[in-house]
Length: 486
Image (cartoon, rainbow, N blue to C red; front, top):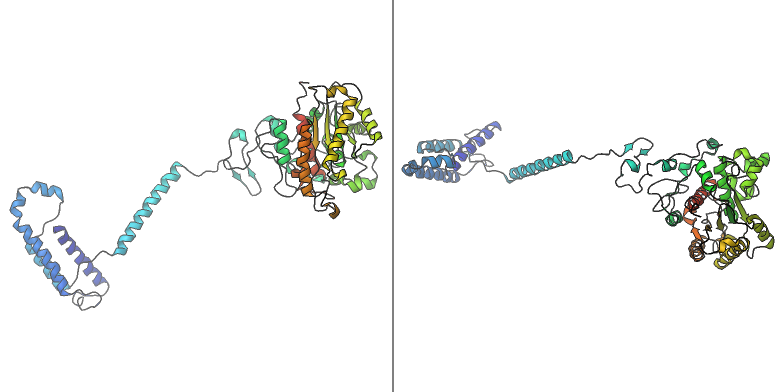
C-alpha cells in the first residue's frame, strides 16, 4: 500500500505540472468539466492512503523485530501520518487526481519492445550469415560466372562447362580466324551454349541432342540433360581421320551436313560449303555466308565430297592432305535406281579398308514420311552394302551407322504439304524411325527439336547456322565411336 501512496504523490505532481504548462491553474482545475474529478473520488483516494498509514504505525513494533527482512524485501519508503496530511492538503488545494496509465501507452511500449527484439534478431542473422554474391559479377552487358571447377553455382538452371582443357573451346568462339568471320558475323557461341555435365557415351549423347532445344528463335542450341562438344577445326580433323570414309547417304539435308563439315575443315564461313573455285560473280553474290544452303539459288554449287575440294582448292583445307574423306551419295527414291546402286558399289570397293567406314543415313520427305517406304529404302541400302562388303555382315562386325530424321517444318512450308509433311507428321515419323532403326542395330539422331526454332529458307531446309549445329551433332557421335578397339 505504501507503494501506492508514493505513486499517488508522483502522479498528482505530474498531472499538476501538465495542467500548468497547458494554461490551467490549480484554482480552476476542478471547474473544468473535461479535467476535473469529483470530490467524492478524491476523498475516497485520501481515505485509502490514511488507512494505509494508520496500519503502518500500528504495526511498527512488530516490524522492528524483522527490520532486516523488510529492508531486504522491497525497499519501499514508509510514509507517516503527518505526511498524509500534506498529501490531503495538496490534493484538496489543487483538485488534481492521480493519472491513470492509458491502454494506448501500454500498446506503444509493447510494440516498441517487439520491434526492438526483431531488430536484434535480424542483426544477428545478417552478421552470422551475410547475403553475398561472390559467384556473380554483374555488369551492364553480361554476367560472368566461374567455371564448375572453381565452384558450384547455386540455383542455376545450367552449370557452367567443366573447367578442363578439353572443354575450353566450348566457351570460346572457335570461328575466330575463319575467313569472312567479320562479314558473315557468325560466332560459334551463338550456335551452342555450353554447360555441364558432358555426355559420357553415345546413347546419352544422342538422347540429349535429339531432345534438346533453344530458348527462342535462332538462340544457341542446348542438348537436354548433358552437353555435347563444340570442336575446333583441329579436333574435327582428328575425328574424321579415324575413319577410312564417312559416308552420307540420303537427300539434300544430308548434303547440307556434308557442306557444313567442309565449312569447318576449310575455316571459311563465306564459301566453305560450296564450289567457290568455279563461281561466277553472280554465284559469289547469291551463295555467300548464310545463303550457301539456299536450295533455289545454290543447290548445284554444293560440295558433295571433300575429294573435290582437295583436287580443286587444296590450300583451303586445314586438315593434312588425305587425312579424311567425307562424301554424300544422294539416293532418295525407292526402289533405288540401278545406276545409283552401281555408283554406290564402286565407291565402297570390295575389300576391307585399313580404317572403318562410318555411315550416316537420312530419308523421309521424298516419300511423304511414309514409314514403310523409308524402312524399305534403308534395308535396300544395307543389303547392297553387305553384298559389296561381306565382312560387315559377320557377327560382331564393327559397322557404325546413324539414321538422321528430317528437320521440323517452318512457317514457309507450302500449304499443300502441311498434312503429310507438317510438324505433327514429322514428330511421329521421327519417333517411329527411331524404333525401326534400333531394331536393325542402327543408332538414331532426331533433329526436330533442334530445328523447330531455327531459320528455314523454304520451310524445310535450315540455314548455315542450323546446318553447322547439325554437323556438330554428327561429329559428336563420330567422336564417341570406339574405333581404336576395332
